[in-house]
Length: 191
Image (cartoon, rainbow, N blue to C red):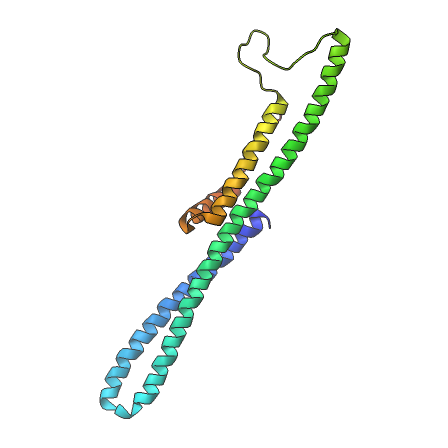
């Protein structure tokens, strides 16, 4: 499932949950109103007790079912939010795989070039500090591996949150992913 698909499932689940919650409120009001009217009616028509009781039982049963349905809809909404986190984690894992493959390819090419240079110059070369610098230089391969590790960590964090996070944490993270998904992508510089 893609993040977009998971986000559209959240939209559907939010609508269902809101509809179910409204149904509970409506049924609570109907039951309360009917019980009040039934009490007044029984004063004048005691013979209607059985009919009114049956209607109250029907309304209470409907209310209980509406409440259970609302709980189920809320659980489905939480599951949809978890799916968003897992889908984003899947994207991070795919990015990690792509980056590691790129780093492996770069590393192999670097070894070839260093072997050619060593043969050409007669001495070993090691990527290190640029001339005049005391800071270790990070090669593109090193940076790519670092980005892959970051993607892997982000994926693991999202999966852990989806599996063990509190509902509010999951809701907030899913909302942040949704907001980021709707925002225009920032311009990147190739490098």
